[in-house]
Length: 147
Image (cartoon, rainbow, N blue to C red; front, side, top):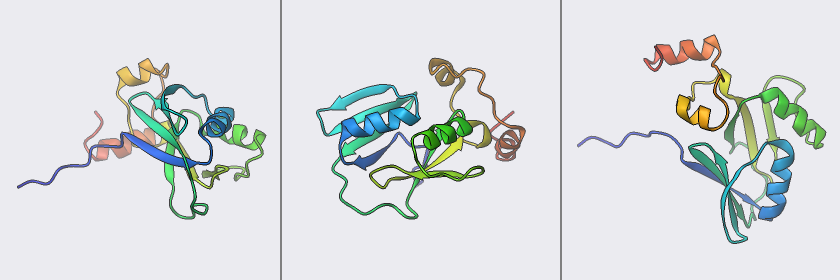
């Protein structure tokens, strides 16, 4: 009997104090499109064929090593937006931050990593033309995932 294969992530849920405050805070950093809500306790932020859920009720201390990688189209623009919002980040290189509720987020640039969205999804998101770096293409090619 074969084991099921991991295909990807549909969504990640972040616990926050208040969903509306979290939407406002994250909206100062990133362009957000709300996919939907489940009352006042949960909101779903669209990322094309994936989403991030913001759920009310965080009670645990800030994350240390636990984190997730948020893929964006322009890491340096995110760094500037975080700095403008008063969030402490490194001046260059790796881009990590903690939101006001203690969620640890690593920001990665789509162009620099293996993760790939279908061209039709990128086009639907208004990101057609977003290209991978040669290094990312070489990594994909080495796995037989790029032509």
